[in-house]
Length: 243
Image 1 (cartoon, one colour):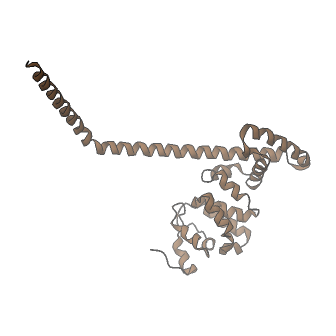
Image 2: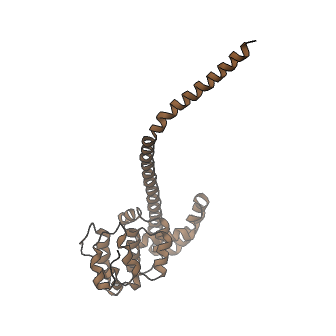
Image 3: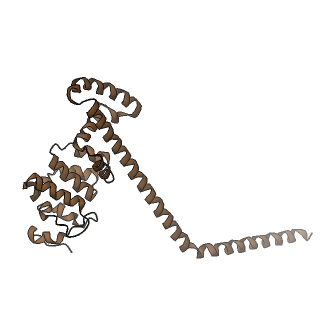
């Protein structure tokens, strides 16, 4: 008759041993929490960097593919005396590509790619810009017929990393027309844009004229992509530097 009490005692002892082992296991884990967090942050940073690199590479591959499609269409289908005949070829080509690859390769899509090649015929420039700009950016940019205005928005967008919506707003808001540089000769404007593109540090000689008049242009001096000495703008612009 004493056996049930012995069994009960064994069960109580087992519960106590389980609790004790759980407490002992929790101790080291609790002590290791800062190390686990540091490891997590390090691994997470590496994964995020890898994902960003993959996205950049995918975007660049897509943009360059569209550029090559545009080049092929312009040089082999729509050039010179083949233009009238090429229109029919392009329509047939668009039909087949759309079935295989979707609506992005419709007749209007292929025409847009051809215009992309017309606007930016230098593959190396496209390869460089595609590291900062998506195809949606380029679609907005090639709608600008004037090459100087288009170059202005392209360089500013790439430097400031504008989202597509912001780029569209700046174009619709006539940002270029509100800058002092818009009144300069085309050669001078392109020189300023080249300096903006190639700048590596303060004192590069970029003229304040590029950034005068428009408050938004002045505000992008804080962007880490732009490394000019903007302090010399203030006396000319008549605006106090921000704190």
